[in-house]
Image (cartoon, rainbow, N blue to C red; front, side, top):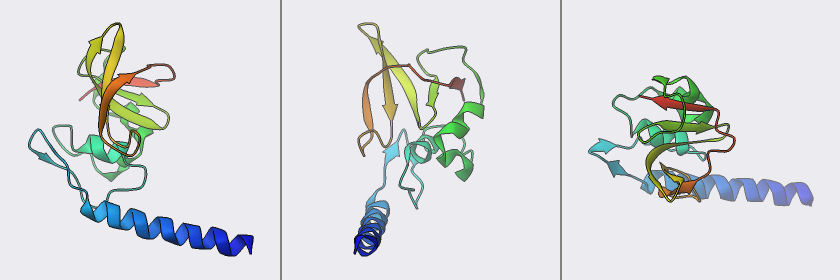
Length: 124
């Protein structure tokens, strides 16, 4: 019985996320977001925020640790990479870095974020 419930839940998640992926289109700065959004989509979102699409390998957040050049630390305009998330630093307020990222609470959000655990800061 437990296996049946798990299988049914997995099917519902796949059906739901597939519909969500088809209906989502985000335009930022004139750039078009890519079709076929994966379930973990912060890297996929970032692909639409840089000058040239680095390709589907960059759907994985950690891949952004190798993108562009080393920013040397947090600074406005840098891409910040954590082991399982990626975003762009867009400002600084009250001593906190403001980061825009996709798949932050299942949405595109701009908010203060801690740099704790960040593995890379990159310029594109």
